[in-house]
Length: 181
Image (cartoon, rainbow, N blue to C red):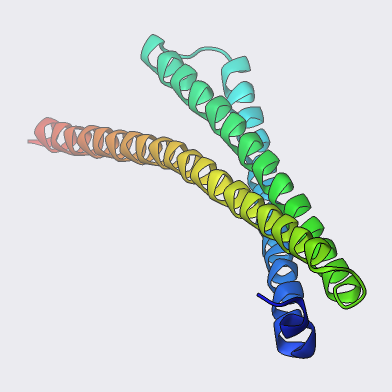
């Protein structure tokens, strides 16, 4: 690749600058949503703590609560790992944008060696950013799976309690009719 071929076409230069900039923006949005998820996980842990602190839990209820606490804690660790990876990606994409900009500006004035070194550095940073996004996304997926387990467990418990209430209600209604005859 000739150094002058990239500097002669404004679209080539824009592509090398805009692509990492767009990935930086996307990573920023992903970081914000991950921070929101982290805060929600903190709130959930606080709710579980309050429920546990209230006491008077049956042994099965306390065991279920501990399982949820363990999953929420694991979810928080995964979210923190994802956030770390996303921050690495943000830094890599920002650096790739800067390096590419330097390469576009300095390319015509420097020799081919410097130009290729800057292109190589930009690509390495870009690949590092993509790696950070992939790793962060995998961690986010794992955290979402833990959240789904808690949701399913709570949904099953609600259905179980509703069925027990319906059974008690039916038994009570049958008992009332039985006493009136």
